[in-house]
Amino acid sequence: MFGTSRRQVLAMALAMPFLSDPVPRGGKCRELTIKGRNVKICPPPTDEHALVLDETVFIDGVPLRAMVMPGGFTSALNQHVVHPTLLSMVTEAVRLLRGARLVNPRPLAPVKLAHPDVAGRAGGRNAGRLRKHAAALTAAERTTLVNAFLELKRSGAYDFFVDMHRRAFDNHGWNAHMHAGFLAWHRAYLLLFENQLGTALPYWDWSTQQRPDATPFTGDFLGGNGRPGDTQVMDGPFAYRTGQWPITVSEDNRNFLRREFGAQADRPSGPSVVERALAMDAYDRPPYDSSAEGFRNLVEGWPGSPQMHNRAHVWVGGNMLGASSPNDPAFFLNHCFVDKLWADWQARHPSLAHFLPAELLDVPLEPFRSESGWTVTPRELLDHGTWYTYGGAPAL
Ligand SMILES: [Cu+2]
Image (cartoon, rainbow, N blue to C red):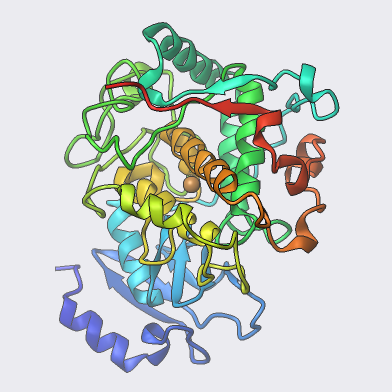
């Protein structure tokens, strides 16, 4: 037997304190076998600012990108939950790989992207775009949207967006996650993406649309759940077998879209959590990370992890768990709803600061400036209405 029993793992953890310490220090690298895979765990660098752990955890010799966060760790394979120890993080990663090979792809060469028209907003390409509730799209609108996704994939631009998000996992220039910048970064990301798409993104209100076989997870839209075993999505336009949606930028060598509804969270967050978030009296508070108390952190989903945004990723499962989660078009419908919640929170609290910390308000967001020449700051993004508006839920 190659597998490691629970008792063996526990015994090893006790024998190697750095495997079970929340933030381990010192000691030598250790090797162990989990489900037949060779796992090496090295003590993280002692530099407190070295939050990204590139050379700390290895599966069959390939480094698993990981980060230290308050209360534990997170890895590129399962970015939306806190793992209390390095050992629990890597054990989960091995399980998710299901025998696939971990890979660390090189960054893709930047693709030339047209950017949103900042100066002439009123007449810009985005102004007036209506982002609808996913269930309010007509059949023709769904077809237009699906075809736009497939065309972006065919052109290579889609995979560049996946890569941009994958690299943002450990980008300290502008933190896209576990940071105050989460909402502004993703608002910019969606705008740039929508601009290439040429049509408005809809939003998936996961607080009320929780059925695994209903919008947006139908055969004429995003397709449904993955099959048992390898969790491969078999229906809809993004199934690998259609030949139109090969996964090329990923943490591992599986080239098919995967989903595993409900495997790690029984259902997405409901209306009461949404209401609690909308009632919060601050956009964000120090230390502006995954332990902060405020709207941004609750909507991102770290308190009571996973909640809201994180929980939608976790509920869908498969590709949605990792740093390259935009591989699943569901990513964009989730983030569109998260962006709408920010707009809803702003409308409910007109006198509060709509983005914090103030010193980042006028700092251009990255990598949008350096990689696509689009200079945009959180301040320029605060009024979403200059770019697009949101439609309401359809009447039942
Ligand atoms: Cu996300």
